[in-house]
Image 1 (cartoon, helix red, strand yellow):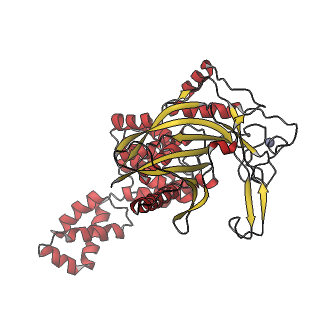
Image 2 (cartoon, protein in one colour):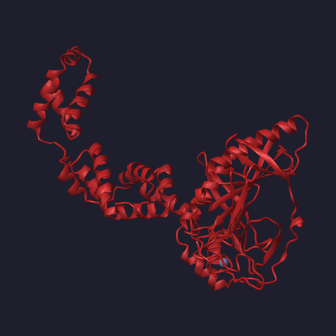
Image 3 (cartoon, rainbow, N blue to C red):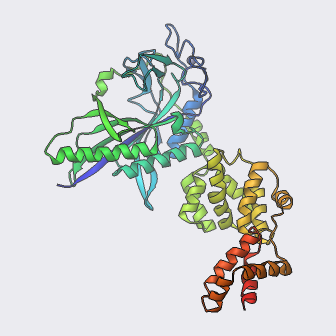
Length: 480
Ligand SMILES: [Zn+2]
């Protein structure tokens, strides 16, 4: 029997608010443990929560970008359970009536666009963090400390429909979602800081069957790679169990990066185990249509539309356009540069190539780096005008980024201008020929491919400053 893989993802994104979901404490990452806490987020008796309006606005913004319906009323509920990182013994979360429902996102996998349904978008608060002493996890630790700084941080949960059919699609979905959240500035979606986490439901079913098979739930994966690898492992595990006539037991599992396997932690709880009930301290939230409309207007052009426009209007490849719109600041940079120089291909190449490589290497954003659209255009124009070679331009760009100087200054100071003086070049070429008699003989003997060797030697002798076109022409002339 043939099986198909059914995957649904729940993404938890920390919202880009200054303060927590129900109190005024700061959400800043990396503060001293237990410095950003107050009576509300530590669940002291007699305190009352107040909803963070900004968190609502950002979640509505996301829901609109995901083509969801904004519900006229949403209600917070208490999800009751005990854990030391949860001082109230319940988590406040939207349950029966979420903020938004029924949307979709288009995800590109292997060059094909796939529409993945969004079941719901809702708001909730995060728990604190346990820091285990003497071991990486609670098992084997001597003791555990608790840091409540994260407690009450606004989280947005985005639940997908079970529309995902492979681990690869799941990773692409998560990447696309992370890019979108960053792009519309609702979350910094930094996986390494835990501001984007992902749970996955996975099951197999015989092809043609309607009902879903028994699922496993994978918890708390925090990298695109982990999501994909954990799911690959689970597909294999499910396949082995069902092909041997066994039954999958519904459970909650964790991915262990070290062994590249998943481990069952507990059999799955059901919703009724949490005794959900409406939070009595908060009123239902009913966003006005005007407010929703205002947020819709503030959203601007979404990355998918911008990518399509870049391809259509500027003739960029799908890859180039995709890379540019994966970050709003980069896409803005591209369009600013384009206003100064109508050469979309060259600008895209420099941004996606050398510039991105430098930014990644130095862990900088395009707005933090010593570069502006005008400087990049200056660089491209210097190549076009023959002042510097394309090769030298790469060195110039790095110098510009390192020093903050203009292209002109860097070129003038380091003597990197292209050599276009024929007389000077001829001298160098003659030396090169004289120093390589063996290759000269080969060339004379009809092996014209040796020309490339002479070009290389000449470029080397001029430290890459020679105009390659001129070198070619002069070499042919000198070699006879
Ligand atoms: Zn607080």
